[in-house]
Image (tube, rainbow, N blue to C red; front, top):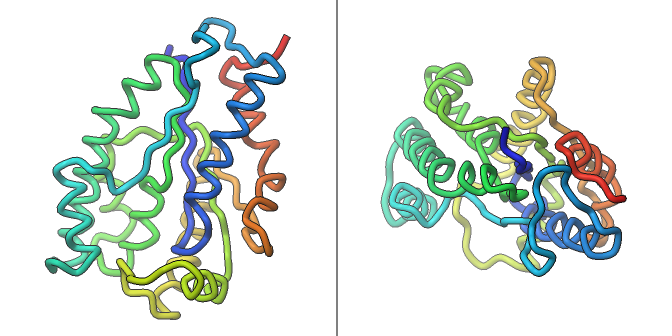
Length: 228
């Protein structure tokens, strides 16, 4: 069995996914250093990082096409975009995620398939069932963390940090996407997937970490990590 752990961070635009992904990585590496976290069978050299950061869309061939569409350099319908995301994800799993897990790393992805479900379900005739079918070759994360923020928080953060937009970001669109994240998460939780929904509101994004710290600790322990 692989010794690695796969953690994904999800949510609407402006929910601080990149910040939280980096925080998770920093905390795990810090635990490893200060508390001598080890794995029962996986013994990485102490000077070698245990975590691997990644994100979607990737810089792969399909991911490059997705980025062109999101930046408005070309246009396709929602189902074609969903297929491109699925192709990028399959390549992502085969080229990076699965090999890193097999080699015992903790992979932390800024967005994964739940983002596809939440953002693309509105424009796909086949709905969630079709989206799940085209993503059937992707692997299920050991832990998915949804950073849930109000749409108003996104607009405030965009004013502070973003110049261009990559997706239609009208209030109604993001409101639907946010609800999709919550509704789909509930369905997947009922099927046994490990998903935690975190209140992402706060003056400082660093303050969000304590709200899901225990979930990260638990999934590490469940997958063989411990400190002596």
